[in-house]
Structures are given as structure tokens and as C-alpha cells.
Amino acid sequence: MKFHAALLPALLLAAPVLATASEQPASPPAAETATAAAAAPAADPDEKVCKVERELGSNKLKRVCRTRAQIDAERDAAREALTREQRR
Image (cartoon, rainbow, N blue to C red; front, side, top):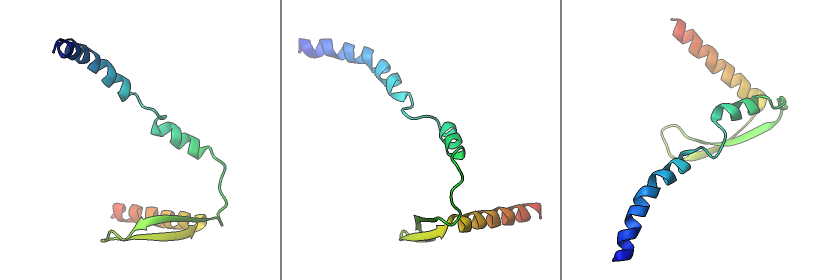
């Protein structure tokens, strides 16, 4: 019992120190990783990129493969459509 009585105050005093040590980020912030990704050389537009997407209205996963050029074209079309709708 004496051991527990001595251990409890020690834990209470050490808890804030342990909490602040675990709050520090282990990886660099997202802004730094985004900058590093942007600095990478341009990829081949004919390279095929596959990723798993969730079907709309379902939990079923589907593998979708497209070239980088197709991905860029779809992104540009979506951006233009959004801009067009916002101007109305």
C-alpha cells in the first residue's frame, strides 16, 4: 500500500510532461510535404496511374486506371465547370 501511495503522486507529476512530449509532430507539416511534391520533376503524361475508389452510394471498392493526361484533363474540366457555375 505504501508503494502505491508513493507511486500515485509521481505519476500525477509526470503525466503533463509525458503528454506534451507525445503532442509534438513526428512528421513534417503538410505544407512542407506539399512543397516537396511540387518540386519533383514532371511525370510522364502517358504513365498509367491506378487507384482504388469507392463507388458513389456504395461501399464497394473499384480499381480505376487512367493516364496522367486523362487525370489532368478531368481535373481541368471539373475546375472549369465549377468556375462556370459559380459565375451564374
